[in-house]
Image (tube, rainbow, N blue to C red; front, side):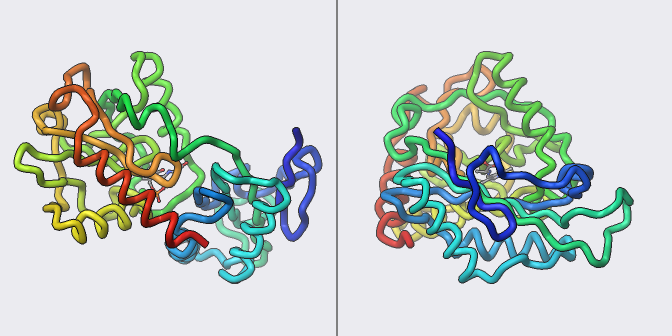
Length: 284
Ligand code: PDD
C-alpha cells in the first residue's frame, strides 16, 4: 500500500516523492533528522523533537524550512492521510540542492521530507524478553549531539550485532560506553541507582532520555549522570536503552554476560510503564 509522503510543501504518493540528485543530503549527508513516535494517533513529545531539530539546524547554520506550528500541522496531516494509529514519523531537513562544493552554498532552499512508518511500539514483544547487546568501538565523528543523517557507522554497528546473533551494539570510547547505535544506554546499579552518561557532544541528547530521567526523579528513584564501563554493566542489577521508537527497552545481556538475573528487571519495567502512561497523557 502506498503511503502519502510530504516533500517540500506537497503531499504525494511515495512513488512520486522525489529529491534532486544535487541535494546536499544525498551528496554530503548535509542534513538533520528527527523520529517522533505516534501512539493512539497522537504525537509523543513533539515539542522536545521540535526543539532539538531547531538546535541541530542552528549548529549547522541551516535555516528552518517551516515554523514549529507548521511542522506540527504537517505531522498531523500525515497521521490523518495515512490513517496512522501507532508507529513513527520520520522528518529530514537538508541544506537543499546546489552544485557539488564542500563549502556550504549561501542561497540553497532547505529540503523538508516527512513520512510515516506503521509499527507496533507499545506492545513490543522485546519489552518482555529484553535485548542482548555487544560492545563495539565508537568510530563516529565527534559531534554526536547534532542529529545528522550520516548514520553509516551506526548501520555498520547494527550489522556487527546481527552477525554476532544479538539485537544491538553499545559503543565504547576511552573505556566507557557512549550510547547504543540508535539509543541512549543505562544501567541500574545493585543499590538501585539509574546511571546514564552525562550530556556532552559525545552523545545525542535523547528526548526520551530527558523524559525518562524526569519521571525517574519524580518517582524518587536515584539518578546519576556519569560514564560507565562494559564491565560495570555486566555486574549491574539491570540495564536498558531509551529512544523515541523503543521508549524504555530492557537489556539482559552484554557481551555474552547476563545482566542481573538475565531477566527483564523491575526498574526498567516500571520506567517503561510510567513513560507510556505519562507520554500518552501529554500526547498532541
Ligand atoms: N535514534 N542516541 C542515538 C545515537 C540515536 O540515534 C537516538 C535516536 C537516541 C535516542 O534519542 P531519542 O530519545 O530522542 O529518540 C540516542 C532514532 C530513534 C533513530 O535514529 O531512529
